[in-house]
Image (cartoon, rainbow, N blue to C red; front, side):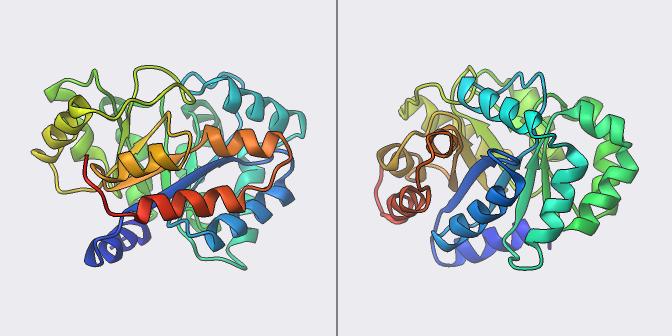
Length: 262
């Protein structure tokens, strides 16, 4: 069982939901990112997503785009992010997922990347611009190196797409709550609940909801119907403003842990 799957097994055994924060690696520096990872772990994060800066981040809204630009200006690359993961592994074993785009992985070399990522301590991959139909080489390399591959579903996903995604996904299914980019406004309603139930009719894998979760109330609402909550732009914005993220992360963790029903 992978480290990510084992995390969800433990959460389910206690009826808990996952808190998965996202930060951009290298914003404002790689050493600061390492500090943020440790703070998020202390605040109760179960898994952490590390964004890999890319010049054309199609799935990301302006907050994360600007973070990527700042990291690129610092000279941050995929290879340097892997070095950072190896450094984090010396002090923390929290599951780490890289959220990157396909181009940097392709340029690195898919097999070489999977080996280096595994050696560094990466546990999962999210590549928003890679669909399961075109991911065979990456899937094989990731499986060979014990890395989970996490694919995205959206409100517009067809039944055929749902079936393909849940088959290719390991670790968890990433449900994009809105048809747009990161940072847009979230609406938790019966439509979302019905969509998550539709996905569950095809898989027992955990479903995590991301995009648009801006604070504790959003996180609480999502946790009532999903297996966990992903929060990115709201945390990245605090980092850009030079504010402490630990207290905010703790408020999200507390909200996610609060029992309620939609």
